[in-house]
Length: 464
Image 1 (tube, rainbow, N blue to C red):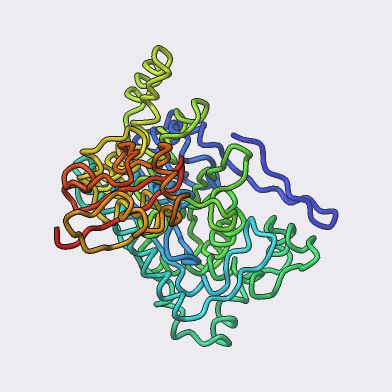
Image 2 (image 1 turned 180 degrees about the vertical axis):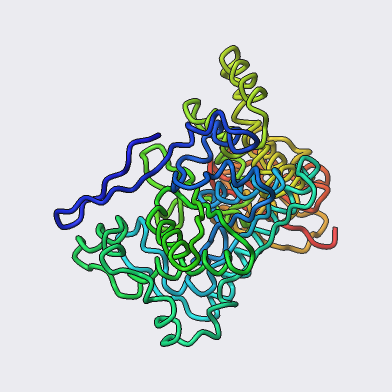
């Protein structure tokens, strides 16, 4: 058993019993297998019949919460979704809970400042976006891996606004708040760290742990939920739920803490940190999503393969052995990027990412021709997109001026003659060259104009 975690508060020491998932290596079933992948880091609490015994007793219900503070989930949330899917594969029931109510408060865990309140229109849009993220990942998972799941398992997306909407505040505090002790709530690490800051913590944020605890209680009562997943910064919230449910019902429930994904400097990836890689295409294109994983360093790729994919550990081991022999091919990184992109964006999303990769890094004309307008705009995000009526006899110079790629007059003329221009990856040095469909204009009616090394312009020709 791992050593207890010690929390000091006003001279007192509060012991939090925790058990490392390494102790589950001998446990039966999927729990040990997922623990070996590093996805389940800590369990709470170790007392009672134990989580392995509970899972062996029959299908269980597990949940994880996602506050819609943005209109999309991000890679940092993806591990929690994967945790739910691992339970689903093993025949258990998974609930992804959207915090349509609690998002108006905002979880203070890991934050130094209180969240700005969301107006109703933005919150509603965020709930839709997060629901889309969750449903799309589950649908892709069903297509890719559903055949491996045990029959009878369910996956539901719920919104906690449905059970807070009609609760009266006095009644709620009277029936729920009386079960929470101030000393225990104040001892939480997320509270202590905020109390030490100049801005302190508002009562609203302080009560967040009570609402998350009630979410667990509600799901326990209505859906028989006995397991909660959360990032390893969620220990305090998870303990509040365990204590509340045990106090009211006498039953034990369990929590599983997942690792937090950080960048190379150790900073948490997410919206708050300003470095999020989003799951919705409108925020992060399949190409950029794919590139995030394909660019992972050798030191992290094996861990990410275990965390973010369903590949068997034996297959991951073989990929790493191949990488030792041929590191320049980056086989594990490419497999990682392909697997995660398929899960988040589907097979078509992966094909889109590959088309963009070939078009940008390999100057493939066939890849450019196969790309949609949306893919081109995603790939060349800063590139102006212009539509123009095509007329026979249009020159290269005319096309460049139409998109303001070059200045008018001798200076623009000189940029072309000196070799500073390419169209569809082909260098052009004659400003008076006539545009020819199939050469300067692709089959999809597009011309990709590049001036210098980084300045791209997309020209969509009409009525070819």
